[in-house]
Length: 460
Image 1 (tube, rainbow, N blue to C red):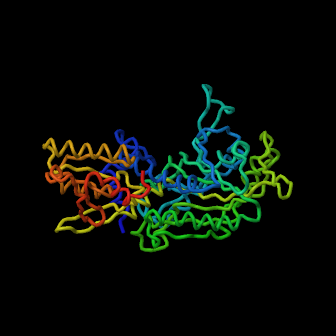
Image 2: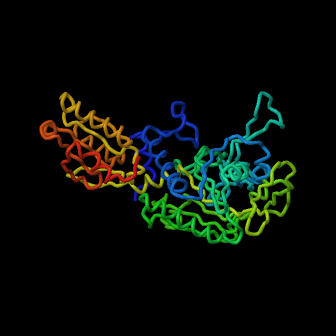
């Protein structure tokens, strides 16, 4: 299986992902998605949205502001507790997360690290709203998308007349001032989340939690992740957040080079049963209960975030099941799992066997001879027709010989190449080449769209 170094090289070489602010030496923990990367990432998000919103009858979408009233993050507990333990090495002056540094690791200044005692470091980016930088104007870049969903529970409920169970889905940027961002796009300071808050009646939460675990696991597998590279990990009681009844993490094999197989896996998505913790925090007259037992009464909320249950004629606080995935980590997982190297005719072929739904480009139309007007014009016409009628991302490329063009499209994951040659001008047929098998088939131009549609399925 491929390691991160090869993926990073491919991403830079082919325009998937670049270092953020590269022109000025970069900015740690930030990455820019290039021409192919933005297409891949958008396709991951579209596939998720289609699965959890369009293909379900119990889900609504939402897009909340990144900046929120400071009180949202006060009563969610983020102001008080959203921190990681931080240590410094007295020798090399480097800073680490206390739970991620090996105390026996060799220091750059020799021998082992000489670490300080851990201290909490709040991960939220602080800013001010308006022209005056004072205490009353403090705000934060949101550390997660979930809180915007919780505070909009009543708005969505009232405007849609939804009945329990139902969910609210959101895709959006979040920001965490990570102490040690690392491992490419795996741990970054600016990232994108795909989150669902699924509201259910108390007593049905365990069943729904199990259903969501299976559904989310299957989504990755159906889009090409090999089951042996994906694990379910049920958090132990001592590992759970204090508000969680149960959490199952979906772990992907991000680090295959590590000797200990258990350390090869890390989280790509978490599915948590959060009970009624969040709505209790934000409802009028509610309270935030911290891990140490302290309670902070909510004296600012203006609405009750309750649901009227017609079966019992009572207002209840729904329980919440939260499937929360990282777009960047999911994108990385799909890249790693689709990467293959093989020898073809004594040469190396790199191919991304991405699921067609995720592939940045669906079809590449290639002229066998670029300076032949008939071939070039026919190829451009086919490209334009496929784009307009099918909506597939289709490109025309004549910047190299046909062999190099095939290899280039293999390396970026394009499922099909269509080659226009001299015979095309005579018989109105083209050569369609399959990325995975390299098999070639002659297809009539007027049958090409139907042929590709059967191969590509519901891709757009």
